[in-house]
Image (tube, rainbow, N blue to C red; front, side, top):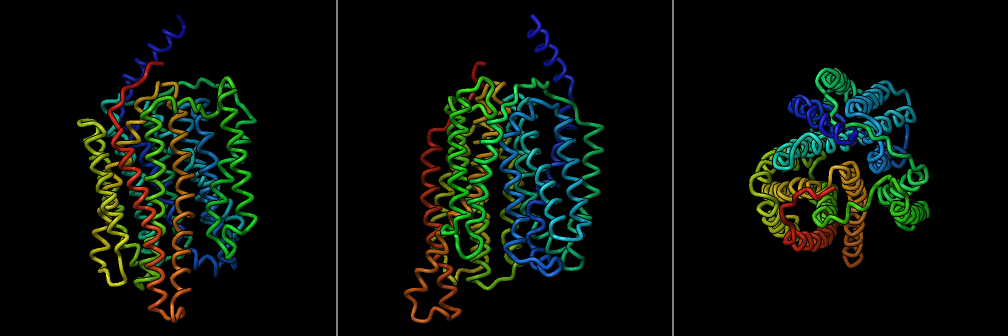
Length: 484
């Protein structure tokens, strides 16, 4: 009796919520928190000089950021069930804002790192709150367009980060990267305080401390290990790398086994009982590895083989990334109308073709050709990513929403970290192999050719991954919410 009363009053309350202000609140906050992920990287050379630290030490500003987001993603399933929408969003934005303020006034590296970790904690909580709110607020038949708006933010913000950062650093000091974000972060908090409404009721499940510890060690170890494998000269032979990954893998196995034993799991892996959700998880792993690795590989090729500047290579990749973001709302609406197959299968075919063309690139390939190829690849990814994501979550019963979003967000972080390390490793190996057979390995022309050979090897593996994605896409179908 009580449950029925609560459900009906909850449904009535949701019926009275104006969706657009809630969506705008979430998008504003998420845009600036995600933007900050890529805003600082281009300032690393300047920071090394001013803060008097080495490149390997400074790399913690990026690795630490990924680590915190990776660790928080699985715990988000618990947090969104313990706190209201407003508490989660405002808490995340306040953490991010405090972190931004700390970064802007940081007198030394350690303080700057603390600020970045606070920013990462805010960003790490933002995406699960957004996804869960959309799932609760919008019915399945209208969910594609709303998720597309989120896709716009997820792709648009990191895409303009390096270019915007380059423009700011041309005339201002690195601290302005944080000064300029602060007013927008404060505005987001004020706007959300006025317009953001609660769309979910906290159920406050039991906290399983052992699961939290195992997930932190497991996901944290894997993300850290793979992220740091490309640093320094040791690579995978560095004990710090392979021991961290091994410990992470063991902890992750224990975490998975525990989730099936406890009554209230931290991350309910029974979500994988639903076939479209499982298919989504597999597709997203491949797409995120392709996306993250291409974002890492192409600058190497543009700068190392084609002799472009950092700013020029950023500009070359900007149109494709922007178009990917701008297409997300469109693909969301098309998903609502035609279902996933009409987008995901053609997008996968398109991706296979483009990845093949990337394996044919040479030092003589024109910048216009590379620009068009990158745009085509990002369009293909936009046709696959958000429609697949939405379709998989649509099949889950409502009580699985927090767990489903946590699983997919965690897998995206892990896939991104693994993808970058894996593909850069293949590139480096191909480069080394080419130079070992070269008559003059120190020649700039031979070094450029070696870089292209390494990138070819990496994109050939990417091409194989794209074929696997196409095979998986053939099994996708429009999903309906399963019974509770």
